[in-house]
Length: 134
Image 1: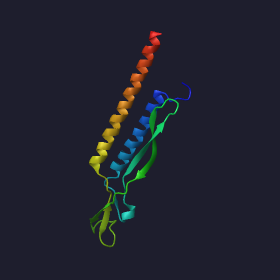
Image 2 (image 1 turned 135 degrees about the horizontal axis):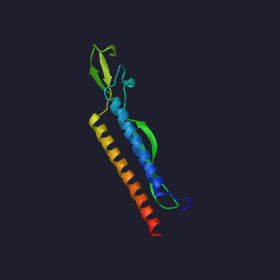
Image 3 (image 1 turned 90 degrees about the horizontal axis):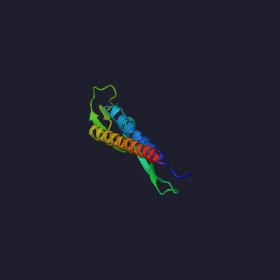
Image 4 (image 1 turned 180 degrees about the vertical axis):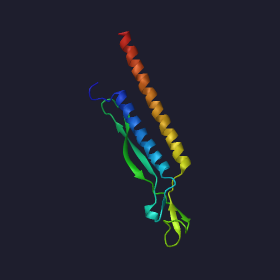
C-alpha cells in the first residue's frame, strides 16, 4: 500500500495529539494558583486544537494538532492589599484555571491514549497471526 497511511502511523498521530492535550492540561494545573499584579499578566489556560487529516489514497482520516491556543477566560480579580503583587487598588489577579475541568481533561486524554495503545497492540497481534497462517 504505497502512499497510504498504515494503522501504526494513524495510531502514532492520535497518541501524539493526546500527549499534547495531556501536557496542556498539566501546564494549566501547574499554573492554577498563579497570581499576577496586572490582569494582562495573569495566566490563562491553554488548549490543544485538533484538525482532521484525510489520507486520499485510503480514505482514512487521522488527527493532528493544529495549534495550542490560550483561552480568553478572564482572570479573577481578588482584593488582597497585603499581597506583594497587589496593584494600587490592592487587587491581584488569579488565574482562571478550573482544576476539576483540568483533571477531567487529563483523565480523558489518558484514556484515549490507552485506547490507542490497545488498538496498536491488537493490530500488531492480528498481523503476527496472519503471518503465522501463511
